[in-house]
Image 1 (spheres, rainbow, N blue to C red):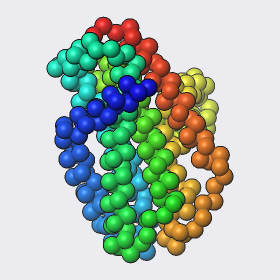
Image 2 (cartoon, one colour; image 1 turned 45 degrees about the vertical axis):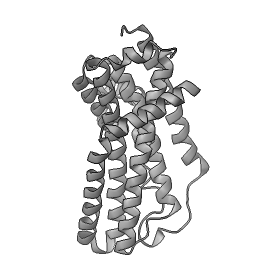
Image 3 (cartoon, helix red, strand yellow; image 1 turned 180 degrees about the vertical axis):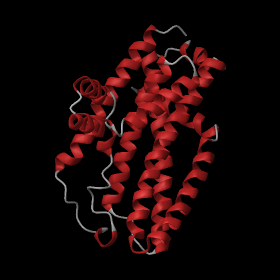
Image 4 (spheres, rainbow, N blue to C red; image 1 turned 135 degrees about the vertical axis):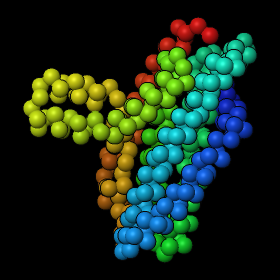
Length: 263
C-alpha cells in the first residue's frame, strides 16, 4: 500500500505538470459566471439555481478530471512507453493501478475543492449563503462519485485498445449511470418483458450514479440553507457503502485484466 501511495503522489504531481488544471480552472470560472447569470433570471430562486447548477458543475468537473487523468496516462503508456520504465522496478501491477486511482482522485478532490470555493464566494457576493454543512456534504458525495468513476475509467483504460475508445465507453457509462433507474420504471410501466429484463441487467451492471446526488434531499435552498439535515444515517451510509463495493469490484476487474495484459 505504501508503494501505491507513493506512485499515486507522483502521478498526481505528473498530472499537475500536464496543465489539466488550467482547462478546468477556466471551466470553473465560467460556471461561476453562469450561476450569477441564472440567478439574475431566477430572482427569488437565485439561491436554489446557484446551488443546483453549482453542484451540477461539481459533478461534471469531477468526471472530466478523472477522464482526462486516465486519458493522459493511457496516452503516455501507449505512445511514450512510460509504463515499461516503471514496471522494470520492483513495483507490482496492482500497485501501479492503485496509484493511478489515488493520483486521479487527489486531482479530482483538488478541482472540486476549488470549484466549491468559487461557488461559496459567488454565493457570498450575491447575498445567499452556500457555506453550510448540507452543501459541503452534497459536494463530498459527488467527489465520492468521481472516485467510483475513476475506477470505472481505469478499467476501460485497461480494456480499451485506444484513447478514443476509452473516452467513448467512459462517457457512455457516465450518462447511462444517471438514468438506469428511470429506464427500469419506464419499462415496467410499458410492460415490456424482454426490454425490462435487459434494462434491469444494465441497472445492476452499470454504476447507479443517481444515489450520489443528494441535492434534492438536503435542505440547501433559500431560507433553509442553514437548517439541519433531515435525513437518516442510512441515507448517507448507503451511497458510501455502494461506492466502496462497486469501486472495489471495478478495481479487481482492472487488476485481473492488467495482470493478463502484455505490456
